[in-house]
Amino acid sequence: MRRVLITRPEPGASRTAQKLAELGFEPVLLPLSDTRPLPLGPEAVPTGAATVAVTSANAIRHATPELLSRLSGLRCYAVGPKTAEAARAAGLSPVHEGPGDALALADQIATSFSGALVYLCGQARFAGFEDRLGRAGVRVHPLESYDTVSLEYSSEAVCDRLADRPVDALLLYSAKAAHAAGQLTARTELRHLFEGAGFFALSERIASALGPNCGSAVRVASRPTEPALLALLATLSRTASSHRPFSPL
Image: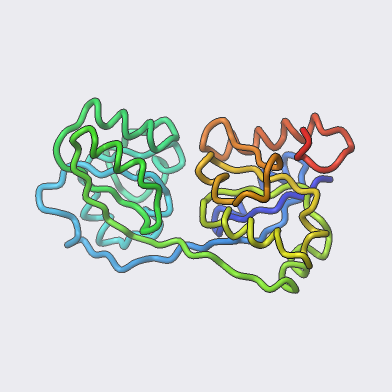
């Protein structure tokens, strides 16, 4: 059974582990990043705001109830189905469900919206969404409800988490986790755990954060969604026969 390392934080890590187990993989949890709430009250929402955009469910999860209550009457653009589901559960309405990609959502908003838009987001984020809206004449007002921080482990702790057994693949959901993974897997004392592993990234931007040493072992999902990432992992696993690693495929 192929072992897959999940680098995303909770609560998503356990959900991903369940999906991997259903697909016949052995999931191993080693979060390489974590999300932390930032103090942000309802007064941060500008007067007259009528529309909010959200590209991460974490932004909703870490927002205070008071802030969500202030946003509840605003038209909401959510990046994809999971974020839209979180927005509706938090009381935001009406919610427009986007295509699952932040840049594509920005294009959709730009074709039908002008003026100022509030953006519920993280402190560490991809600038492309705001840049694209800005070029289209949309004024973006960020509301940073959380930050993403890297987690560090000693080599002994990593060996313990992995039961000192090698993994076949690492799933990467953020640039911060990918950067941490690149540094972690480069440690000489951990080489026996990762030398045959492939890296599976949610996007090209995330893959590029790994660094130059991962080379051809990196695979990128066709779309920046977890279903696309897991479909890629499953497809390569089926075609890999009995040989490790994924990287020569």
